[in-house]
Amino acid sequence: MSFSLRSKDRTPEWKGSYAHYDLVKELCIALGAMTLLAVVLTILFSSPDEKPSTIAQWSRSMPADFLTTATSELDGTSGTAEYGPPYNNGTGSVQHAAFLKPQEWLGVSHPIDSAKAYVIEPLDTIPNDPGVQRAIATYNAAPAKQQLAWSEAYSKALEKATFAADGSVKLPAGAYGPVPAMMSSLLALAQSGGLEGTLVSSSQFFQTDYTKPLLFMADGKLLEERAEKLHLLGEQWGMMNETGSYPGQSWLWLYTFWYQVEPFKSSTNADLLVVLAMTVLSLAFVLIPFIPGLRDIPRWIPVQRLIWREHYRAQRT
Image (cartoon, rainbow, N blue to C red):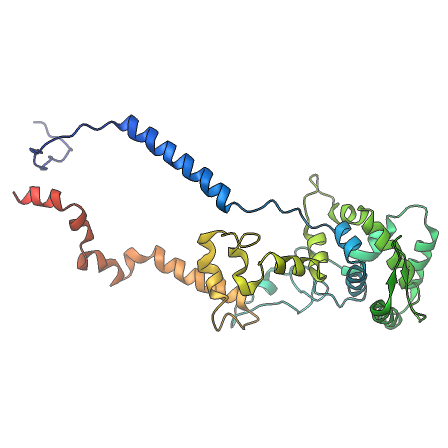
């Protein structure tokens, strides 16, 4: 007694006409057409190769903004200093939705003390400059209230400061303590390109962590002004665009769409709300085979019968 596990093929034999089909020829034509199309679209729509922004470039082209930002890092009033997890214990950007507070749950995983990271520690790397070391010692020895008074006075004075061609800063008379000496040295270090190297350096083997320099530049006006010129602000669909008016990643439209409508648009917790909305939509898509109603749509609209109508007709005959 023998039996076979293979099911019997009940598909009727095709008795219609046959046509010659050259698969290799079609493959060559398709490959050539797609190659030509890719070249043409690359020429027409590829994004320009924009040069990266650097701290050296920022400090040379916008010295007043650089010093203002560095001063806010020193006195703890910058966006990074008040950001919150994962950088510090501030409350500036802590997002939540009802009982969901993942930013707080994960805590500070990448600690950044803005005064030390962006001012004190880089200045400590300057060799053979006793004036800078005395200024740092004076600043560190002063009480927090005095440090804040010096920084605020210096920040206000920058609005009336003048900058010489050699990079020196001329301020109106005032009680700034050691802050001018510290900031002048920091500006010189930045313009030489040394500050960026100091911020990137870490204990890791590969020096590829650009978190600190990016946050530092983001606290100033450089990146915002450049993003506005390149149409990369949130009002213009943000990350869906490439630089300039070039089309970007079309698959991101579903994410960026939510930032343009309420209640996401005006919410301070927009990022978390968008993540939750996309999670729900993604789960609904994945679970379609298990959701009553949605899973029955193919039975109501038998598209496959329209596509394979010749096959079904042959079966009936």
